[in-house]
Length: 124
Image (tube, helix red, strand yellow):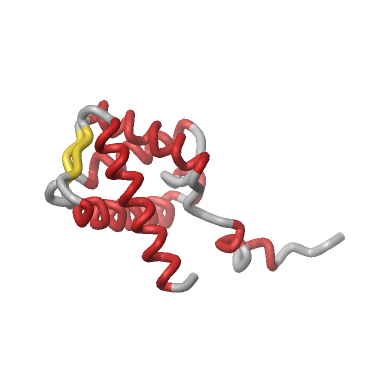
C-alpha cells in the first residue's frame, strides 16, 4: 500500500471521527488535527491488539467482540490524545456509529486483500 493511500485512509477516518463527535453525546474532539492523531492512535492500538490476540479479537472484526474491543480502543485513546474526550457510553455509541458508517465507507478495499491469502489459494 502506498503512503498516499495511508494518508487518505487516515483523513477519511478523521472525518468520520469528527462526524461521530458531532453526532454522539459523550464524545468530543477539539480539532481536525486531534481527529487525525486519534485516528492514528486508534489504528496503532487496533494493530497491537490484533498482533497480540489474533484477527478474531481485532477491533476491525465485525461482531459483538469486535464492537466491544472497538469501544475499549476508543475509550483508551482519550488517555493518549489531548483534546479527545469520551465517556464509556460515548465510546459504546461511537463504536456502533463507526460500525454503521463502515458498512457504507469501508476502510479496507479489495486492493488490500491482494497480497494476503488470495495469492496463495490453489485452484482445485
